[in-house]
Length: 356
Image (cartoon, rainbow, N blue to C red):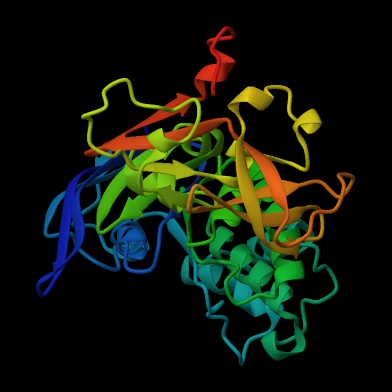
């Protein structure tokens, strides 16, 4: 493993920013640190960079412990959310800044800056100042400046937060493609799920200073390891007692109510029974709200007193508020203590089951 954090703890006064943080990252991977505000993700990034020092534990980069190594000597490139470009310097001088500190020759600097301006698609802009560039262009310059000294590790703190939505989406793809070409191990912090899923090879979920789960975007989405991840990832509805729905009834009538998490894609909403392949497993619900979401229709429904949300395609017949519909719940995430489990509707596995 190229980057390893072992039993990392960090407090700011009484606030525990990191609690027994352990994870490792393979060389060449692009990893997203994802979590809500205050979950500890930025503190982790700053400790890896050397901008904060852990109270205990070891930070390993390339097999060496770097806890006591100064930030400038860790071989790390850092891209800040606010770009942090030097306003009085041209694009060329901003990118060349780290190379100048390394006392590279003029020839080497020109060659490297030319390579990087071509990489970020800004050849011909070398003489412009930051205030003459768009937000997306400034972020690319910040990226190039961080790459100029040939870092072993690239850290990015909310790199797209200050950029408008359309440009942000374009930069995500550009970043993933560019880092893939360069092969530099990279870690970026974000609170945006869509961003993490779209860009990262792996995602590390943080919550209250702890690591909840690490895995590929697909693994985390399909198999959340903890109740927090099940509720945090995707659009979720908390169900206080999922056993009241058909196909999920408890075999033990005395068993306590069980909480579950439902996502919109777990729910099938039909105008009539003919739209559902297994109508005997469907509940009846009432449409409470309808929202056009561009590529689909979001439908809020109420089933047995429980508000739920599902989607219908633009090709399906329109529904109206107050209409009675048929609702099939395919699966639910359940949790007990710190563990989660995916429960499938029994109608899918017990073909001979009959629900009355």
